[in-house]
Amino acid sequence: MTAILTPANPAVPLARSVRAELRRVLRWPVTWVLLGVWLLLNVLFTYVFDWISYRTGTATGPAEATTTVDGLLPAAIPDVLTQGMPLFGGALVMIMAALAVGSGYGWGTWKTVYTQGPSRVAAFGGTLVALAALVAGLVLVTIGVDLALSAVIAVVEGHSAGLPAAGPLAVSAAGAMLILGMWASLGTAVGVLSRSPALSAGLGLVWSLVVENLLRGVANALPAIEGVTYRLPGSSAGSVAGALGATPVTDGGSPGVLTELSGLAATGLTAGYLVVGVVVALAVVARRDLL
Amino acid sequence: MPDMDATIVSTERLTKTFGPRTAVDAVDLSVRRGEVYGFLGPNGAGKTTTLRMLLGLIRPTSGTATVHGLAPGDPAAVGRTGSLVEGPGFYPYLSGRENLRVLARYQGLDDRAVDRVLERVDLTDRGGDRFKAYSLGMKQRLGVAAALLGQPDLLVLDEPTNGLDPAGMADMRALVVDVAAGGQTVLLSSHLLAEVQEICDRVGIIAGGKLLVQSTVAELRGGTEIRLAARPLDRALAVAMRVIGDDAVEVADGELRIAAPADRVPELARALVAADVDITGLHSVERSLEEVFFDLTGTTTHHLTTASEEVPA
Image (cartoon, rainbow over all chains, first blue to last red; front, side, top):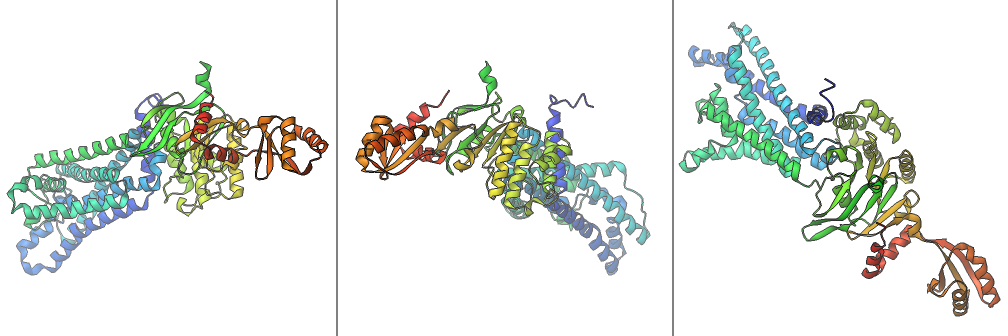
């Protein structure tokens, strides 16, 4: 181990930067507020509201009641895991990334960080890896919370509390990390470009929550922009969620979930946006004067 | 070449323009290993911009610079340089100690290094407080602590006494002297000339983006000057020119200013008395850097060019 970690090894500055960035991001209250808000929203919209409506809405008939409770059981987690992520989860993660990056320009911390020794690319790479670790951790914690809640519901309702199949669960987890990772990547790019936490978070929110939704609204009327609209970041992520089994908003599912693109095309586009965000952020960080 | 070892920072016609404005204009400066170099000039003179170029934070428009013999911003050069530029930049939600621990991670240092630099700037007791709760002076000291982290060969401190009270300024001066005594090179910028003249070995004076002069403090301040108030002034002038020399005497503010060391005062006094001149005031003064600075910036462009040509290579 010591032999590998000689200063000549280019991985050393990156590893040091990752440790430093994880330390400051994990001690940042904003991180926990945003991740906590996501977990709360996930619990409310995936389980609590549906469970309440299931328990109080028996008048709608046993057939519908059965379909509703199915989505609340552990076996449904691969289908429902990503349903809130294209829109709300993505927006929260993007805010987190945009703030984590953009705030440093106001605080003057980037100037401090870039004069510690690791190159700018290594230092900012540390930020990217730290954010990726947060996204991965968030997805795993979400799965854990979902498992616990759905097991409680299954027991209370007298249904099977059997675990979801590992394969589909792993695919869904990977899809969730891809969706949130793309938003985090775009958040860092906006944060770097705007050099301002307020502007980057604001612009990112307007884009993810408003612009894409409005475009989807007019896309039906304007076939010329339909093809482009469904290939924008939020819509691509929505099609990833749709391909993983989340119910599209058109069928009464979650806002942001679509089935306009095939799973493969949506995954490729979403991964492409993730890479573009990372490359843009790194290229600007490496070249731009830090005033 | 021994000179390569002796010079830790050097720039050649270093220039930075922002749109139409030239912030730094063809600056040639050199900092020698182990010295305290004062980079002096008024606010907006181009000091911070120059230091930012030396740290690789911004790119020169033209000209070159080397730090530790490397291009500015080269990780190997940056790793051996500690800096505090344009105010301390820290995470406001973290404590002072935790901020330094984050920086220590970047440098691959352990937490004992953090405790040592906190001790050095006298922040050990307040290290656990959040940075945003610090006073301006404490923030500044934490910035210096961060610069000291990892015992770099070169310390670049931009206005390190900003926000400090007089006692804090004295502490900071003592710290800089102490650091230099330990063999570290210090490149220090300031707009307070009086404050640095005692601690700097050499200074470079910059105004309007141009380096006007670079020299030792002693050389810049020159010899002493004798000030003479006497009646009648014209007879005193004639005596002084005869005793000291024609070129050494000038009349200003109703008195004579004579460029001569203090040990010429008795001789001059005797000659004046012998010539029946009434002496109302006779004393020798040392020029402050501030006076040197005003002399430099208050004179014509031609004079300034001459001055910068006198910069030793």
